Image (cartoon, rainbow, N blue to C red; front, side, top):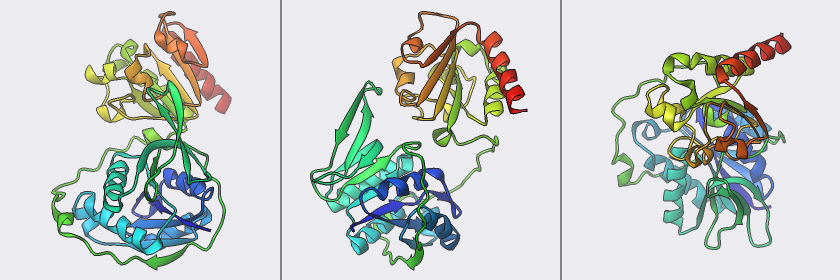
Length: 320
């Protein structure tokens, strides 16, 4: 069976959920081969093998941390040359999409970004994408070269399929351009204890109706009760009520959780583009004509400051 390269998204060897989803999808079209760049590959291999990686190509080098993107592209290209895969799957993060695009140019192949599903086809892997603010669903395949595909988080539920996951050293020669952009400093992001926005199974977002940064604790309280991530609309972010890193929408982050709760968000097309593929959508808005209600599975017409605290207490009661 053909092999499929999967670029591992991890934090010091702790494998992140999108990678497990990629391994699950990769098994539909071939045997997954994980590419682990950075430290603690042996530890990561236990998890990667549990989810189907037949082997793990690993390389730890200072270049991955000291310079931006290009060293990882060099390494992924080395893995491609060594394996000659049927496809290359990459997490659809900002960095992941840049790595995928650079690799596709180098190997002369087509690229598909932000896929939400993947299946085997007679002429190669077929991807599903949500396009035009998720108003349409398309199926596409690469017609030139080896398909390079980036996949959105929460595209599929990870499924375990234990294999050996043996670690093999990946030989990499870094090109001159690898050191072109150097990282001069890093500032750790303050942890909130909540899930990463793009990976969360539940997201609670606040918009213009929250009416101020001092009122966002109402949104955070519901998120904490549900074990959810907190999002914000562009209007809330532009007003300075919540950090841009939490913005959901066309100019923010794209999310696709199992449950998306929009409180005080009108549902402008810019916001819908970032959350319309959510599995279940609930909206709370006092304007019964708000566009968000055209999209939702469940809608509550009411004051979020009355509805959301009641919902939070009900969640706590049921969990208790």
